[in-house]
Image 1 (spheres, one colour):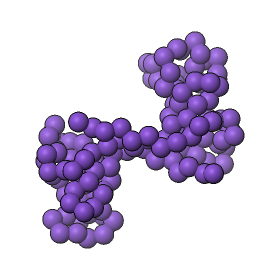
Image 2: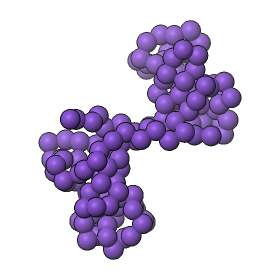
Image 3: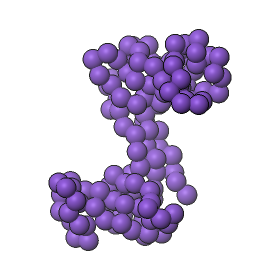
Length: 128
């Protein structure tokens, strides 16, 4: 079974669910649509609309997660080389032992064959 790789915000406004981004202000969310919709403005081949967070039915962070080498990871991308994953555990020693490389302070990533990542699933984290 193949799980799609997805990461980002999703929001529900009225009867529709949209890809979203938080901001530019703390209480604002930008909704995106591939088709023209009422209240949306055109923006380089897609449409967008800024709303206040209280107008939304819900807002969630969606991400693809799994386990590599017995440690938790987030799946960032997939290509012919395998899965590009980020370490989400709490031990830099384990991360380095598994072959992750440091991309920023405390942030580790690696590309591994897809069959080495287990329990791949989509996580939906509610945003208050």
